[in-house]
Every structure is written in structure tokens, then in C-alpha cells.
Image (cartoon, rainbow, N blue to C red; front, side):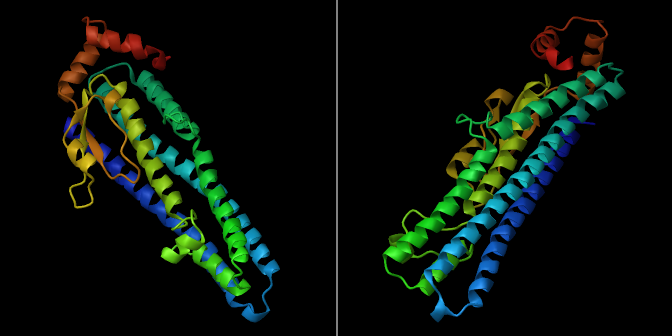
Length: 311
């Protein structure tokens, strides 16, 4: 495995990250669309002239229960996909050392397996519990905050519509407009129902995309911090008209693994690994050090700092 091949493997992980992100967003949109479609079918079957306020109350309760179920499914799926991308990222780092151990008779393969297993477990915990971020908010709490916002918006639309003396049918259509992800909310909507969501599923798929990407970046960052041969991580921005000024400024910039910044929400940037030594140089150096054939201050310091991960 040449160094370029290692970066190629990490590009494969990036490809898997993109697929996971796209499939997760697609499912989220489908879940929201299904709730909207079901509500529209229900509304289409009633006689608008005979609707009473009780119908609206029942509709809001029904919708809230549906979004509660959506939240539970969302958490389950996102947790699963986050674990998948972390596993893919750390496993590829591990394969780098396994190849070296096999080709250069380095008797450390079980130790590297233990190290990257621990990195995987630590990263997964830090992502799910919110330790990855400064605010320490759990992933499940972020999801429920968004779901609860949706549920409170429904109650607000109902109370405001009734206060403004809207007809039951028109208010039912307002609920339909709110839950429909494809429905545009115009200026009048903002005046009547200020503070409610303009696009009901946006925060959910923004959260999913950001978390999968950050889990990928965080796992790579933590793995590279404990990889003594990755000296820098080179930021690679997307080169299209959607790239933001911050990402354009970062393009090509090299960071030490500990200094690598997180991409912004809905970001599409990635990175490559800067490994100055060749595979032969790494294998021979690591082999001589592991067999106590020569002293190596760099590897001694690395082991003193991270050796507990071998245990």
C-alpha cells in the first residue's frame, strides 16, 4: 500500500460518507412527505362545510404523534449511520498499520487493533453524547428539540388561527401547508404565524448531513492525532459556485490533526493526509523500533502519550 493508495482508501470512505448522507436525507424527506400526504388524504375525504373545531384539535394531536414516531426513527437511523461512518474511517486507518505489520514483520498488529477499536468507541461516544461540540448537547436532544418545535408550531397555528377567526377548513388547510415540505410559506404566512418553520424538514436533514460529516471528520482527526506518521491534514474545498468564502480560503491549507477545524453545517469539504515518509521508510523504522534494534525518540514519545491505548 503506497501513501497515495492510503489516501485513495480514505477517498473511498468519503464516497461512503456522501452516500450515507444522501440516503439519510432522502429517507428523512420521505418520512416528512408521508406524514403530509396522509394528512392531505384525510383532509380530502371530509366535508369542508361540516368541519368543527374538534377536527382541528384531533388533527394536531394526530400530527404530533406522527412526528413523535418520526423522531424515534430518525434517532435510530442517524445513530446507526454515524457508527457506520466512524467504523469505516477508523478501519481504514487501521488497515494502514496492518499492511505495514504484515509486510515489514512488525509485531504490533493486535496493539494497533486495540488502539483503533478504542478510537472508534471514544469517537462514537463523543459524537452521540455531544462531547464533540462545545455546547455538549446530545444528538438525541438536538433531534427532540426540533421535533418539539414542530409540535409547538402546530399548537401555535391552531391557537392563532382560531384567534384570528379563520374558518375551520381554512385553518385545516394552513396546517396542511405547514406540514407539506414542498409548500412555500409567503410573506402573509410570516405575518400570521411568525416564528414557525418555513420548511418543516430542513432542520432535520441539515442536522443529519452535518452530523454524518462531522462524525467522519472527527474520527479521521482523532485517528490521525494518534498516527505518528500523519503530520498534516490538507483541506480540500469543493470547487464550484456553491463554495463559501471561508471554505475557499481554507482550500489547500494544511493543519496539524489536532488543529483541523470542523466543516460548517451542510458542508461538502474534505481533506487528504500528508505523510512525508514513504511506506518503506515507515515500515523499516517502525520495525526496528518495535524490535528494540534502535532508539527512536519520536516513537518513544508517541508511545508514552498513547501507549495506554495498546493495553
